[in-house]
Image (tube, rainbow, N blue to C red; front, side, top):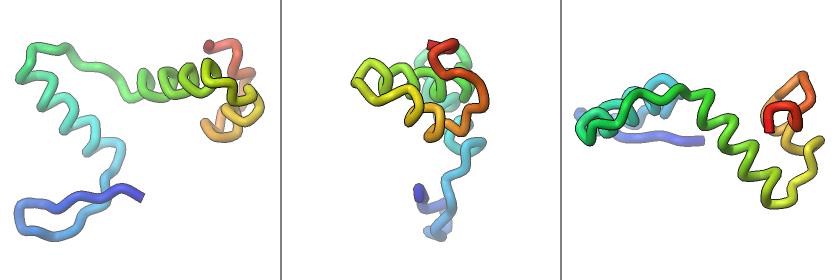
Length: 72
């Protein structure tokens, strides 16, 4: 779904690991401490729930086994 061009102009798949590497590189230059990928997941769930998306839908989208409202 997401991709980028590497220094050799080859198309690469944007993985979670690579995404977080880039985030930490940019944030580090600004003095922002490391943030876990889990923070994005919880933040995304919170955004959907606050926007009125049903908890059952958020649970399926996040592939969560437990009650999503417990995290929110």
